[in-house]
Length: 64
Image (cartoon, rainbow, N blue to C red; front, side):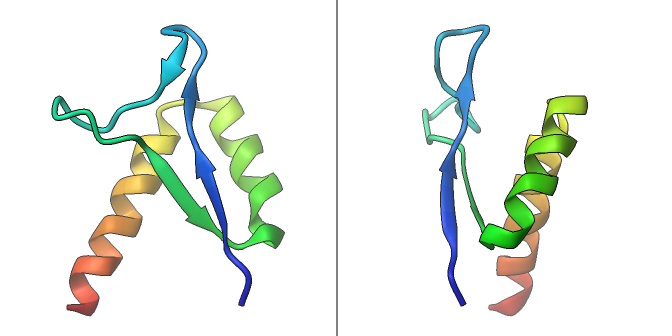
């Protein structure tokens, strides 16, 4: 399965989006066929990117 890594750029701040105060860069690993839907969703509501990121992290934690 192919995966695309998307780095998130915060246009308002003019820098890569960070997920915490430590300075980790926000990135999303996503299947290419889901990328367009993801972009549309985040364009409509930018806060969705953080919800999406957190849901992925929760899934990874549940696997362990």
